[in-house]
Length: 581
Image 1: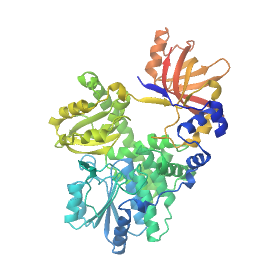
Image 2 (image 1 turned 90 degrees about the vertical axis):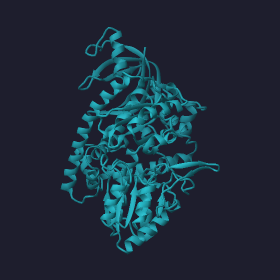
Image 3 (image 1 turned 135 degrees about the vertical axis):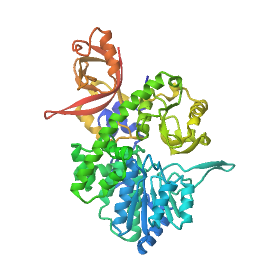
Image 4 (image 1 turned 45 degrees about the vertical axis):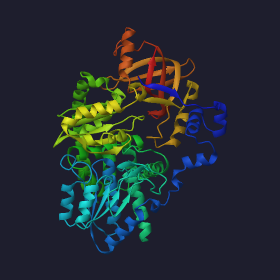
């Protein structure tokens, strides 16, 4: 069961409403984000005029600029070495388009998920060296590639690392010390004493800021900055980094540009294919993002990079269709594998574990991360899904807010042949005989209980129906884009009467109803809690087909939206969790 809590507020509602000059829902949301004065309000809302720190303050960046300037002046062959997820695709596309605009002899390489695996590897590196690479720039990887960077150096190839993942480290008497590859320049805001205040950028955001800084360093005009910002916004949303500070500014500006009409043929083709009328963090993260990721899961992410760097409208439309087809196939594979793994967990001792470690040799390794995320949602616990791979097993993990997965895996690093990631997600390779020991050690080392790790729904405030209107719902959009660390505000309601319950949708698994207090009636939709509703209706003698006359009372947690239908706009509550009574 999900835990509920209401954020503490020491000021009464009428004072908040008067101070902020807005309606109650937004007033609570602003207060709880610690936006307590006029300057902070303006700074939070006015992302268009956000002041970024000078990217040259980030350790390694200026040195990287100098290396690239030398490569441009001497027409050296440059390879961008990216990654196969949306952030890797977008950061590669940003770097490619940025350097192409400077006249560079520029090429890109995206590792194959199955053949090459994540990050720099010897086999792929040798391909680039044999192809005459003189400078390799890693995007969204490289910070752990100590041996591979050494190999490049032995062949006289210069290297620049642009990454946002945690560097490996060792504990010394003086404290934690990063263990970094000996690249010619390393730029990663997760490094200790990196000189940059904002540490939460994804690779796409870092590469966007890097290219902007590079053009300034070279005294050149970046004519396609808006296009690169669009790609950085997609990366920022899809990589689920904190939507605060610089990330929020990049995402907000990028989304605004896309909604005016995308400057990127590939992105435009994908938006048109998916018939998206308005771009926001949801449509980027849950409609566009899965299509980008699907190419790297089922074929090659080079297809996705080509989509975003092509200058041909016809080719862009062709590639967008391929990505969409990949995603439909990926959905089917995911559903089958998830069902099989869930049954395996529930029919074994793993169901009682605090940290779920599931091995399934038949699962396509490309969907291991998606399934780990679904298991985390289903069971409310950190989950790792492993599948058979060359030389052992390979997989991905997804964590919960209270459990640092990278730190936990680092503490048992001797069991794995390779791993990397951050607090909330990780990828790893392991010998098959070590899987049970990994499961045991992760669970033994975890001091928290399953209940401690259960997700918590944190409400801004408990509202009455009289607080809910179209205007109060629309006001909340000033907080967008929503995502990690800037979640869409949740609100609660207590002991409300429910009328006109209906099960809708193709599978009749969506619930539509109204909350009614006798004087006000508000539309409600629930996509997530079919089982709760079905059980209640059944207990009351009704069924999914015959429930219109049944009423109920409930406490609920919801987000506040606007429903548009036949030209009318009305408030709508989207239920996240409900307790019927």
